[in-house]
Length: 434
Image (cartoon, rainbow, N blue to C red; front, side, top):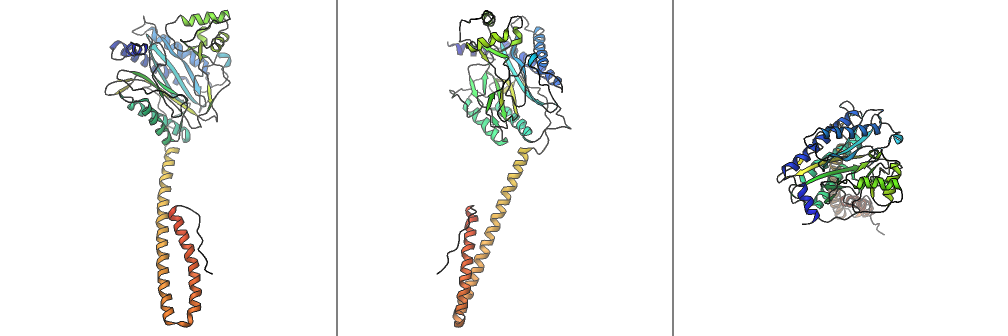
């Protein structure tokens, strides 16, 4: 049996105790998330909120049913501003940017019970209320992101493939005029790590081509929806990285003593969940040590990236259990309500497109009626000319003159008529007779 198969059996929710541990982690994650949301007020600092959140997770775990197990933080709390992709959890000395009214924030955290992890993330707008709803691009971003999450959960069923999910995400994003952020993956949840080996790309233009993944019954996945109204091109911001994870496949003999001490401390743990630098405060120079381990390939850094045009980015994450006949959310069940102003851009856009189509149809009908009318008049004129030729020989010169004049007009009339029917604005000139 392969290690991958062993990992799947070890995390299969067909085992009641494992299912219970996943669900308990989800309940705690949602409770802590709601507490953090209530504290995101103008003037608050990100560092203190993140520390309070992590401490609350540990406190709740110490009182839970499985408190004798190895429980803890599956992902350190990060609260990222609107243009950031995520993972922003600054040290106190770097916490200069305070929360302001109207800020878009993304709150991301994770909890594990006995190594079984659950992740949750939701976006909020500070000060958003029924009397202060969001509108425009931001409203479209929220509605599109929520719709993608909803449809993904519906389609995470046994037998579905990763390619079908990727295509679905792209289709819905296009409908709302938003763009999936590149190189974002939904993961199977594996015991002892926040990212399982089975991945589903949430962007059709992902950098790495994945093998086919067929979703199976009793699997657990974390769905990660990261969307923007920008071009989805991100760059590393000039922000200190504070969240890291050990790469279990790498090994290297470090030069500094503190580097070796910290790496040894992290390596002793059976689990490889991400950790925050502040959890190493008992060591000297933890920032230096983490940077050394990163350069040596021992730690994976969770860098803070920013959308190139400073466009807003939202992030929804929810951990789900795949059952035979349904998919159940075990986190992300109590996200705060977002108040959205009616007639947002997507609605206005749809109405505008509908009106444009109706106008084009009416215009085409009018053009056709005009062409038919002109052709009827020309036939009547030709009939009159024929009668003139038969009855009045003296009027031939004048009749020809009118005939040439009308012929000229006839050429222009046909040119416009064809142009409208073909959908081209270019006029065709009638040929002059010599």
